[in-house]
Length: 183
Image (cartoon, rainbow, N blue to C red; front, side, top):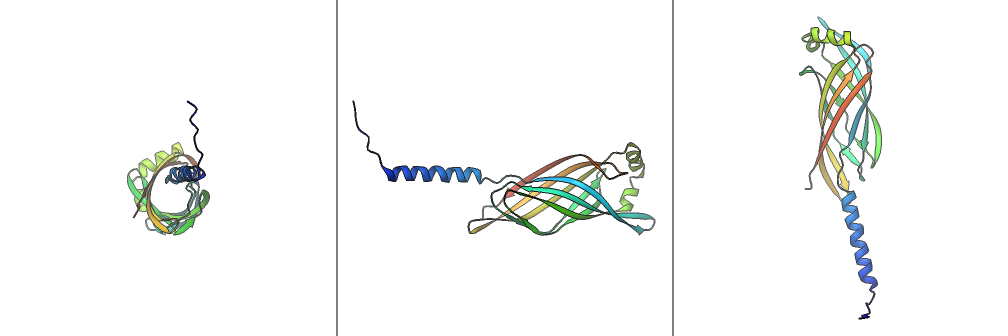
């Protein structure tokens, strides 16, 4: 009835190491980054007869919730208005530390000819002081875990409502989906 159990330190250490490894794997599961448009600033107009092209700077807050740093390549964000490609913004190659936030300043150019094709809707949006823009970008890069570089691709789709008069961000909905290659 009173069988004595022998304590083994080696078994306890192996068990603790296995529990720590399991916890590390669970917490290391890649998490989707978050993106938020902070502001839109008009920098200039370019005369492109018979219309004007607008140059802007988009300030975007990016959060890397993962426990490893990331390095990403340059890419182009497409900006849409009423289903048509209106312009683009350049995302420069860079890196971001683990569990960190940073502001990206993205130079963008909006095509006045494309906006002119939607003149009636644009004027209605200006009168309502509410304009909906959609944006999409695929960002590729690598995340270094120990000695291995894992490739990843993040697809970001955004819907941003702005005041077309003062360029204030009124509302936004951002969706990011990350795919990690384990090879």
